[in-house]
Amino acid sequence: MARVLKVATASAVGLFPRLQTPVPTVRTFSTSLSSHQVAGPVWNLGQLNHVAVAVPDLEKAKAFYKNVLGAQVGETVPLPEHGVSVVFVNLGNTKMELLHPLGNDSPIAGFLQKNKAGGMHHICIEVDNINAAVMDLKEKKIRILSEEAKIGAHGKPVIFLHPKDCGGVLVELEQV
Image (cartoon, rainbow, N blue to C red; front, side):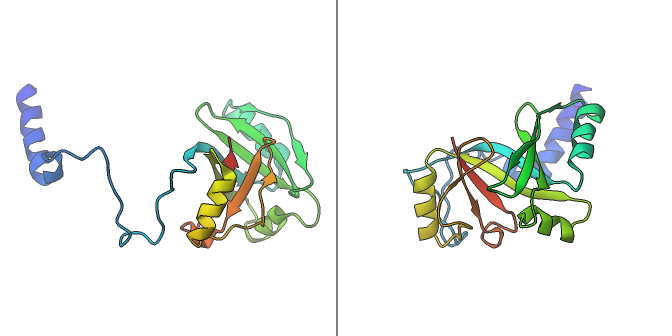
């Protein structure tokens, strides 16, 4: 068995020559590779806080995650200033945020008109200084969807970045 593994490993190294060369522990990004610069020293990007999913039936979605998958499901929290009702589903290393329209002007209502079954709406990433992040991102020509941070579902300041500037993904940044 050891001989077979040795031969398999040797042939894999031949197929993947990068396995023979050590990978540097620190990488730098050339501006020619990316139109956006890496975050400066005034703010830091943290961990994934949650993935938000728009749902047409909040009670049905809550029941699915709790009763079928066995997840810890929180209570429904109305956020009229954002036009949504939210429920957080604890997944251990992160959370899901179930979003449902609240009121006629809800941005989630428009999303659900286009996506009848619901679907992924945005991701939320933590930052340590949201005001510095906003200033830095504006300098880098990343569009912010509001003039200033608003208080989000966790009671902390949040902003949303335009999906066209983020690879097609609506990104929420949340102050930690």
